[in-house]
Amino acid sequence: MMHYWGQPVARGYAYGGIGLLSPLLMVLFWAAVIFLFLALIKGYHKSATGDSDEGLNKAFDILKERYARGEIDKKKFDEMRKDILKPD
Figure (cartoon, rainbow, N blue to C red):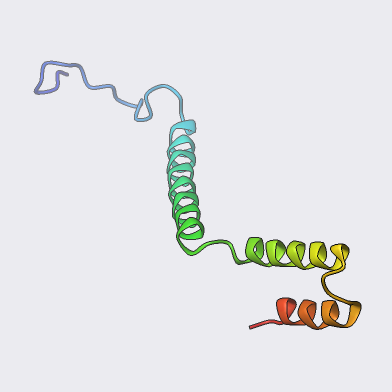
């Protein structure tokens, strides 16, 4: 039996010879596409808003340096540390 384009119809070979692996590969492909899309969105969002943990770490490092240089005493260090680490 000829198909209307002149090619024979492959009856019983609906998945091109690789059987049930074809639908599995399709699902894996789309899962990878969705994962990459979400990773890009998350990366863009993080770069657009700035990473708040990075800011806290930088502020705390500066505070520790000031304490180590003797610019502030223990009491002031503890007060400022509590202010920095206070949840919003």
